[in-house]
Length: 74
View 1 (cartoon, one colour):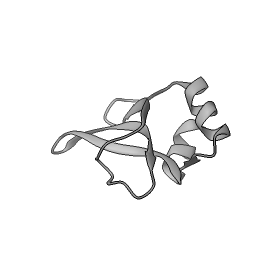
View 2 (cartoon, rainbow, N blue to C red):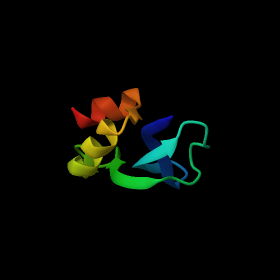
View 3 (cartoon, rainbow, N blue to C red):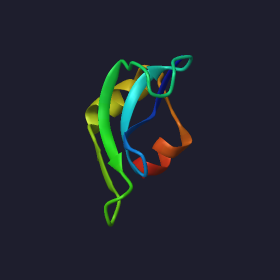
View 4 (cartoon, rainbow, N blue to C red):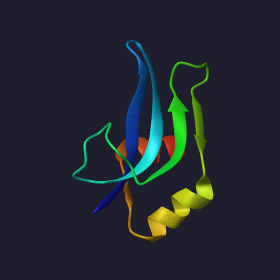
């Protein structure tokens, strides 16, 4: 089963996240199938950039977004 979820990057206390497509059994910060965008919670306001065409394509293929990714997309 494919998931669209966040992977953590950055230094300690300076996180930023990548929005990626992964197999649901893979590790949180491991390899991924495709990078869709990124999320930076430290900027004011928080920055979210995502490739909407690729995101929609993966949704149509059956990938399930995590709750946090759903909230970020809205």
